[in-house]
Length: 406
Length: 61
Image (cartoon, rainbow over all chains, first blue to last red; front, top):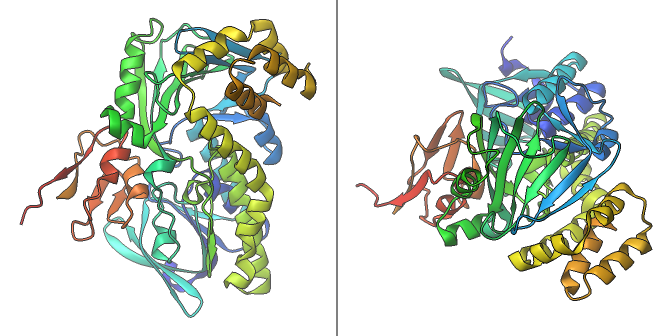
């Protein structure tokens, strides 16, 4: 039987973290679900960094598996432009650096075992609604096939076009999008392997940061995210900034690059409307990204899962109009909206930090204090007190530290 | 003027697709396709591209 004769309950566009989490949830709910992806390998090419904190493992009920959770992370080191650093490290692990290809394949296998059907190298070129059914025209090798579903969940990433084909504009704008570029490097040294490292500064990574996310044995994910509008002004693109920085790092400059990835990062907050008749949007396509650090793996999965839960209600009610699906955006903002607001505010503050501010911060907080801030041994009011005393001359830094750590 | 993609530089990440306000760009596996009729020469794709693979060039007739 070809795709033509079946009308799926749900077709998911995109087999990334959002699409696969949605697929797992739908398959668990016994929906008839198909996941389409244009790529020829799940998880490849990946987009940007690979960190996932413990809170996401808990929220998504994931058990870290050494096959894909390759490096335990116990803290973070923030590097100021003058080379000073603030290290916040805990005794127990705070999260993991993932081998994302393996992680996404693990999710795909779980989805498939539960009954979801996955097809790769399937490029959706047209989507339209007709009498409550969505018909997708899909390029498959040398021909075009039609697939039909009662609804679509668009998890097709920053380059999402499926939702746009169905009348919901998911396009990004330059102000709210970061430009990202990333290497997997090996035979490198000079950094703590159980910490995430972030390097700030307007010469280093304007309106963003460079990261080293270690992946054991002298291998790491080394990347950059910068404001797209800044790179347009300085005429240096993300690759340019990253390459020139690596060149200056003694422990990195002679390393080997074993993978190259790039990507746009929607950091301006969630899409205001993520549902329509026969359509829900999740993951990067719905701009589900943390506006401060640009991470999106965990939140995309949570978004995908919520989309699937709403979709299951639609399946049960046999109603795929926005009457049933229209609760999705509201539920999402109830879940994550408040946190997003404070994170957007912090982002705004961060964007106005000068190199001098970063240096001041790194010089003001001692290692011992940083440790206490990071490991939870200080109460909220003690932290506020510490920041206020230490940073009294730079009130905006107090505000930022409170947002981040209190 | 019309957007052009240099496939030697392109990392086929799709950032240009997501930023294009008129959905003139499509990423298919490792190739970028630009619909010149839709392109409004806004240059957003040039600005977002992490690797400098996009440019605006004079439209050939």
